[in-house]
Length: 163
Image (cartoon, rainbow, N blue to C red; front, side, top):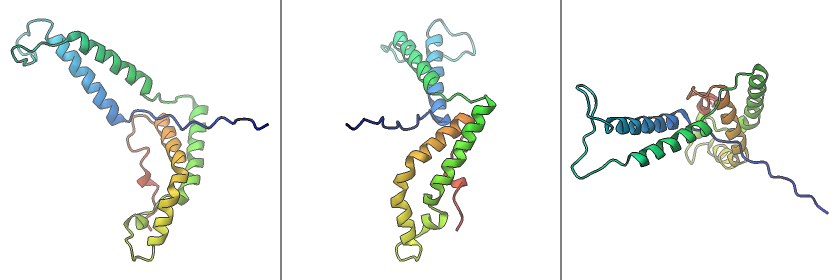
C-alpha cells in the first residue's frame, strides 16, 4: 500500500516594502480623517473637505484600520536576529542561488532576438525556468527575512551575467 506524501508547500510570501508603504499610508489617512471629523479643526490643522450631504462612516474607517493593522502585522516580515538562524538562511540562500543560476537568463540571453546565434540557448533557458521558480521564491523569502527593509536584496539582476 502506497503512503501519501505531503506535498511541500510553496514558500510563504511577505509584503514587499512598497506594499507595506501603501497600506501604512491608507491606515494613516483613514486615521487623519477620523481625527479631523471628531472636532472643529484648529487654525493650521488639516481639515477634510467633505461635500454637503456626504457623511464619513467612522465605524467603517475604524474597521478598515483594524483590518490593515492585522494585515501589516501578519504579512510583514520579521527580521531574523538570531545569528545561527541568520547564518542558516544565508547558507540556504547561497545553495538556492547555486541551483537556479544555471537557468537564469544572462543579459545576452534577454537581448537575443530570433536569428541571433544565442537565441536558441535563451529560449531553452526561458522554457526551463519554471523548474526553478520555487527555488527563486524561497531565495527571495530568505532575503526578506534577512533584510526586510532592503528593496534591492531580491533583485535577480545583481546575479545576471553580462555575457
